Amino acid sequence: MVAGRSTRAGRGAGFELKVVPRKDGTYRLCLFEEPPVDSSASKVSASSLRSALAGWHLQVSEGAVRASLERSGYRATDLRWSRRAPFLLHEVEGMRLDLLFRAVSGLNKRSRIEDLLIGLRNMGREEIAYWHAKTTHLNGGHHADAIRAFRVLFGGGA
Image (cartoon, rainbow, N blue to C red; front, side, top):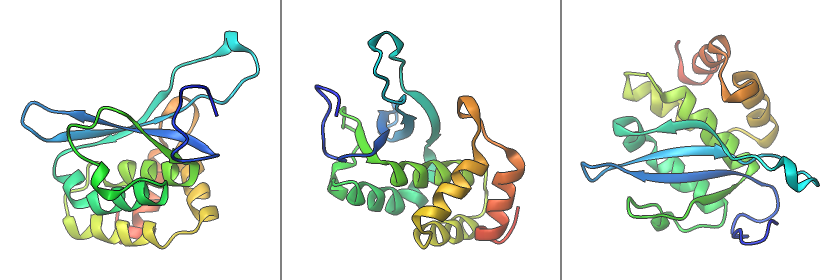
């Protein structure tokens, strides 16, 4: 572990979840991927924003977010709008949340989001890694066709 960094998530933490308070008393969640650990101190780079979620999409998905935090060693009650310290997530939980945030953004039907949540909850480590790789590419972008395929397979529609 890097000096000064919490070891809450333990070995394999590659994602940070940050709570960003909003003026209306709600919050936005931003998921960052930490740069790979490099032996050269001169090549240290900042974490990159992978995805974010807010509003009613977050309200519907909040249970899944809290479950991922618990699997990374936090209490579900640690998620609150006033939190300043980032959550360090296990790699698989970071990938799970990245998939969740990308898949539910832009959907309008609550039932489809709930179907995606059930599908993600039942996915194993290898399946999460596969879909995460398919839906992302360099620089944190996403591949729209892969997102659409993921939504069709696990949410019942594009």
